[in-house]
Length: 124
Image (spheres, rainbow, N blue to C red):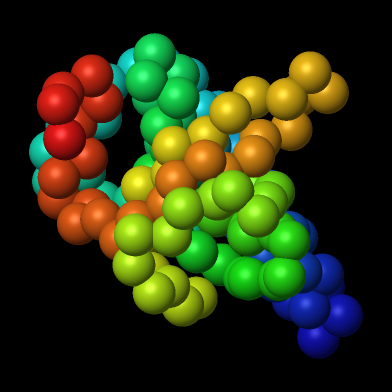
């Protein structure tokens, strides 16, 4: 019985490591400037950056007074941030951001977006 339990635990641990490694690789790939084809499925822990246009696309995971968590990345809100739409957790959004000297991001403008419209480098 103990041997079977250890084998099950080992298999579960191995599966967890595999899933974590794949998720990490997907996030790193999506944080690059590589294109994303129209219709690409975006999961809640993924954010897609179009660094050429200072835009990012992702799902709002949580909202605070001065911070939004979008696809695992924190963005700062300021009094000058423009909201084109009312937002809630779970919404897919397009963020126009500015990169701060410390490497953090501040939202300049944010709006609801259709995930099937994501095409990095286009005029969306």
